[in-house]
Image (cartoon, rainbow, N blue to C red; front, side, top):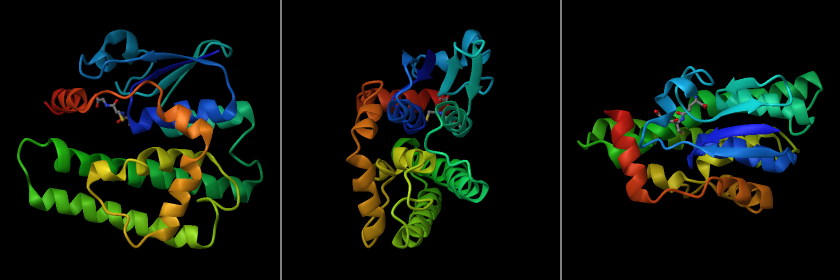
Amino acid sequence: MIELFTAATPNGWKVSIALEEMGLPYTVRTLSLSKLEQKEDWFLKINPNGRIPAIIDHDNGDFAVFESGAILIYLAEKSGKFLPAEPRARSRVLQWLMFQMGGVGPMMGQANVFFRYAPEKIPYAIERYQREVRRLFEVMERQLAGNEYIAGSEYTIADIALWSWIAGYGWSGVSVEGLPQLKRWMDLIGARPAAQKGRSIPPPSDPAKLAESAQKMLA
Ligand SMILES: N[C@@H](CCC(=O)N[C@@H](CS)C(=O)NCC(=O)O)C(=O)O
């Protein structure tokens, strides 16, 4: 059984969606980010970075994995799903997964912070991150013009990682107008029952709680 340590945020949803899609049995332990449970000593033994998500695989000697991209690869290898074995196909998936981990996630995260939570509105920072997010969306638009899914003709962990963030694009204040392929892809993934179920685990925090968590983490 997998134990998932998570909260209702895009990085957490990547893993709950993957577990749902792969049909792997799991239990959920929801951490309160506003109470900074992710910084407690017991959790730092599981994830030294003090952030969600993390998993413990109790069927594999209580092996702990942190970093959502590494968790997705671990689960794909464990289940044999959503990450092809053929080296070039596998590399294509990992390229788009890294594009999410190094680009879309951090840039959308910063756009959210400066657009939503920063106590002071800093136009330079808001514009910088929103412009970069829009640029990344346009990169995806071009890729999706020739491919049903982001890494080709198959649904993979790269789609899971990207969709978990991009479905919440409104939160960053970035428009998807003029990006028909991106919208098509968002609807395609959003129609999957496992994506819908995974995105509701754990149940969403109310916006006031989210703002409170953000203030504490930024302090
Ligand atoms: N690169 C990490 C990022 C994890 C991350 O930033 N998690 C956020 C929630 S989406 C978090 O735990 N924030 C709490 C904090 O910063 O203390 C991953 O992909 O797992």
